[in-house]
Length: 478
Image (tube, rainbow, N blue to C red; front, side):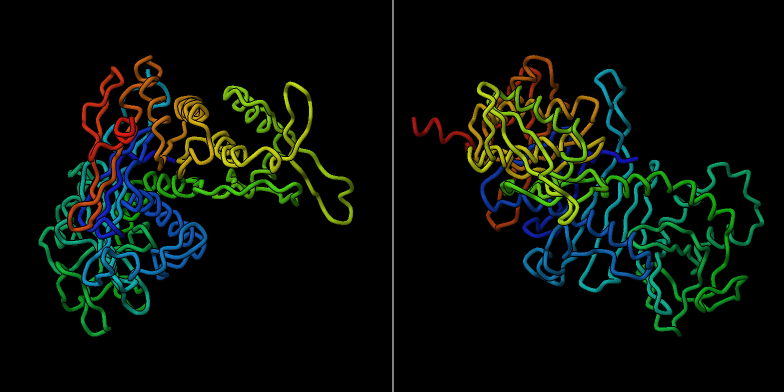
């Protein structure tokens, strides 16, 4: 089941040269000057989505884990992603996951589990820090016999044993595997998996005669023989531990996979709906970054059209939408078109005849309605919208975040009107300060991006001053 992100950690990622922690809530608003680094926050999440999906499709344990250029985000390469293009640095991206309460009456969820990936220029220069049920585990990527695996750092052995078997009486005191681990010998647990150590294969004695270079903290020792051979690497099997690890980590891995697979992104420039479009059957709940799949979703789901029209009405817009098939489908396939119907006169017009605002807001509404318990990343929702409409759009975000859809929104914006609507709803009691996270991204003197967490009082007033007087331009002009 997909979970929400309560914290994002970045280091040496694009403009974030030093380690930063970015707290996130049901609605997270990212503000800041142009080119300050706001979009890098969204791109880091799209990098994880892209890499998870690629790894699951390939099914190859040795394939490159991080995909910097793909269908969801184009970061170029590691060289263009690492801060300052400095290849001596390592990029880190980490998330903390937790289940969000579905209603204000639910209890506050626990802190949650976390995972951080740290990578270098080489595909196998990868480590992973895992926070699982209050324990910390560190893994290193290790390549031997043309296959990549994860090795557990020796400092994490105690934590692993406690996680695998918290009841010490169940372990035989003379068990050779347990005693070997407790003696801190050169034998370490080895795992299979692409972006995540999914399968505990057993214990491996890392040797130096197969071009295998162990990471720091792993000794090179001679083999003592084994009960199992896998790709010529002697592995001491731990069947009981493998089953325990599978049960232990499965919930977190499934949550990571489901969260990033269901994460959607609405880009800053939504395309204008065409007068006619070919219908393409949909298998997901995604309208696309530009809204290209929106019309096909609406053609398949009349209820989606109804819900979108309800929101257009609540925004006090004069039109409602209608989606229809065009003529015969026997020779050219299904062709559909969208019209806007004036609610006062009944006159039908094309979206291209009424300005750009409708084309910009329709994909936002459609994606928010389609999403269920997932994360929706939005860039500049206010583009081409009147300030009054921006505030009403804020109510749509609130409705989908706190209502039955349980959507988490991460919104990169410059809109003062959107902010004012959220503050008003906090004063009125519809929102709480715990529902909204306001993040201001700024640049330090050296050029690195820094993050300011702006706190809100239950009265709807900020407890933290905006850096550099952001939003003060209006007062200066007056």
